[in-house]
Length: 639
Image 1 (spheres, rainbow, N blue to C red):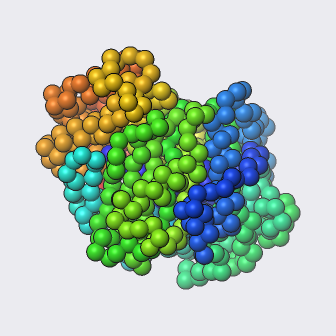
Image 2 (image 1 turned 180 degrees about the horizontal axis):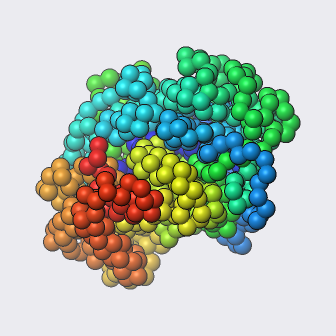
């Protein structure tokens, strides 16, 4: 089980990842930040740290207050918030020229898919509310996974090496009450987002791609022959367009502060690139136009993340069933001798206050160390505030890292709550000609944050699938649905997330009678999650790398999963029975359905994959093959 931050780095705002911050459509009204009460001395010292970076820049205390307001709104009970209406449909043909094959809304992670598609000969535009640039916080991933960028042509091998900011070994799973488990070459590479995004953008523009920065998408109209994005200059900014043939050596991020692409509320900032290297394609509009001309394309790809307003419209304002709550950042001051290995997953103690706190840590460039604490939760009103989580985080760092808090200097701070929708993931297309990708589609593993790693995992499949969909005009809602099929390897992981997320009232309070009957609130022992994980990883370690390594990289394969579950039932049947009681029989039966689907997908992949070369021309059959290949987790063996 990959702990969270490795695929990518967590988002700038409450669940609003870098992916979501880029190119966002009209956002719901921002909650008014509540006036913060007096912080603890430790937290106040961190918030007052000179030069402390927060997503989007700005004052760290205001950033905390804004995140608290979003988190409070998410937990508030009552009627569902009204969903925005940003997409409309019409039966009228679009009469003007359709200038692009694909428009990608959201450029920070969308630039990778946009580049891969542009290099295949499609006409692609990236629409970005802020600026297409990455943040300074590293994305952790393995070399084999990040090599996908080279395989799809998004980066050259030299450019990839330029983007790798750190590399280390080993990485560990360190559970309370158990000896650490060490592995090598798993999430041990730190990729600099600023460099990776910049290099991909250069290749995109050199191949003829168009980037529209400072362009907020106000809505979209789906015609029978096109989808038209209604854009406006971001607030007082003007739209900047750079297009094919731009100088590949230019520095697109020059002069922008770190993290300038997002505001402190998690939405893109007003920073706008105003220089133009070449006249844009006709639909891009001229720099300084107000408002810009519409952007017409055959297909709109929504890479605006969890908080995309198009996604909000599709989900009809539904609140998330579960949340991954994350606090942390990057620090200086950890002794070099203690900063040579990373932690994929660590626990310092047992569960308390109805949640189990997990930790992760990675060496960062220039001697820094990335430290995060996170928990799997629901959005119950009694869940802790970000400030309470930060206090627990700061209290735990000295014991975790063996360094007094006063000896550390915080360079970056991040707070996020990532929404999870077990019954609606991945999100199916809701309109013709519009496809959600990445976190907007909720295609990430329930055990990770999503973002960069999720995008890379599906990049080859999406590149081939989108190209074939556009060229064959397979752009109906049903046809696009084959690009976001159900994935048993992902849905099978929801059981594990649920088992690590005690509900309010389930956890026994201190002083509860040991061995209490398995009924009613307060029966779950505080060591339940640790005991479950010690059992699981003990079996995985005994089975060996063929079972352990895929699990650590968020890939559930049928045979290793079957062996692991059988081993756990034999090793600690009492804990397994507690999980059944904790989650309820219906959720366990639902998981069994996904487990059987994983077995079926594994069998079908073995039978059908050899036929792939004979079905090159059939869009639907190719998507069926992709669905069983990626849905069975067999893509793990592709890199």
